[in-house]
Image 1: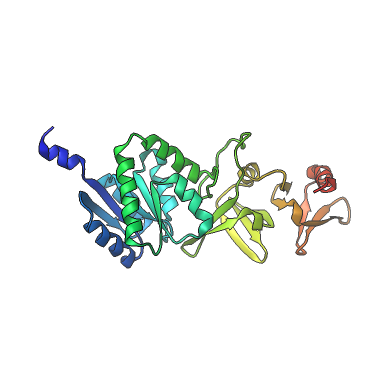
Image 2: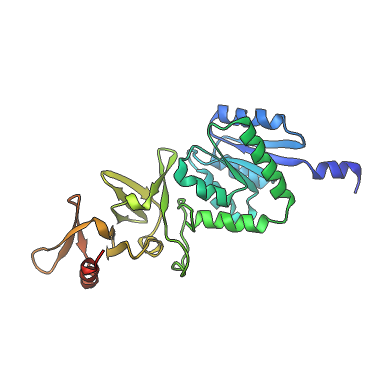
Length: 279
């Protein structure tokens, strides 16, 4: 190998993705001071990020999570974990989401971040890119997209298979709101209802919509705490205040907040047994 080839092999080719101009410039300024780094492109939204990743094939992507049109997680989904370069997520998420990014990325930077934290992330990225751990990175990205242990749901399908013994159930769900993403702890959700191809998460008076089927959500929620009472409704059992019989043979559950949800005929007996079970 020639001296030039040796030098080129050490250069880290970087793509910067952030919808905020100041955010992009901050990263570019810091990257300018790093040795053996070549910025091969920038992108101001997720659509442009997907195009850039496919065209310039960077070694490393600084990927903003909260962007309009396509979030950072949507970008990973579009590229596919197997083809995704090493990734440093840049996020304004609170503590709920950090475990997910810590296990699924080379590193993450929480805005606003300090120079030394950036330098640490770059060092970790160099080691990861030069190592043989890309396959493990891809597996971790898949887990992030599919709502695996300590992960969040992006607007993408969950696994088709039910949760296997020993796996964790969902603990938090990421929802998109006005171009941003918020992490909702599952424990705060009162009930879930179907809305076409979407599901609505009801948290007190708030309502959040995710692109997910009721069946997949039912499989990913802890059955000790959750039950599907109707084809279009899943409830957190400790929120149930009463089981009510209406005129005829229809039944409803009344939640502690006063909301009433219809109970399917085939699910009534199982629900009665669950409600009788000591908590």
